[in-house]
Structure formats: structure tokens, C-alpha cells
Image (cartoon, rainbow, N blue to C red; front, side):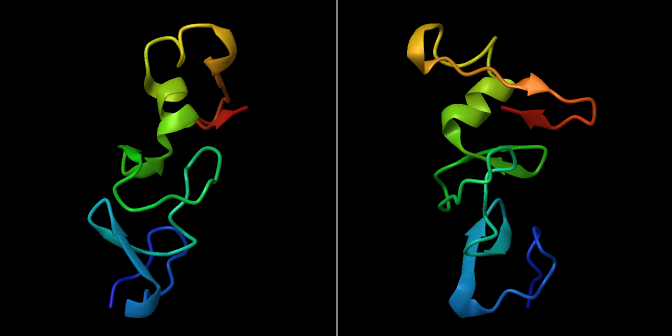
Length: 86
């Protein structure tokens, strides 16, 4: 039985989501930035961590923000420890 990469506790079959080649608890598979619960295969990965496609992954790792202006633009300021904030 594998341990969840988020909480480190064992993941039982009935509560398992498989993503990024690992088994996660259903509620532990969350965006590393905004903490939104994600579904298997419907998110992006960066350095082994899951990110929601909109807005986090595009804003953090895309070219100069996501949406190219207007109301759909999202840019996160970088903290000193490498994590981003809204």
C-alpha cells in the first residue's frame, strides 16, 4: 500500500486517486498554489506538484501571466521562499 504524497498516510483502495504516477487521497490531490481539489488527469504538473490549469499553472509558469490582459489575466507575486501568493 502506497502513502499519499501530500499527507504521508496510507492510501486505501476505496479512497484512492491516481495521478502523476502516485496514489493520492481524494481530498489530498489539490493545487499546490490555490488548494483547489483536482481530478486525475485534469491538471498540470511542475516539479512533481499538481497545479490547476486556470489560473495557477498559466500565471505561475506561463509567459508573463495568463490571459494577455483584461479580466482573464492572472499574475501571482512570488514570495521569497519560492511559493506564490495571490
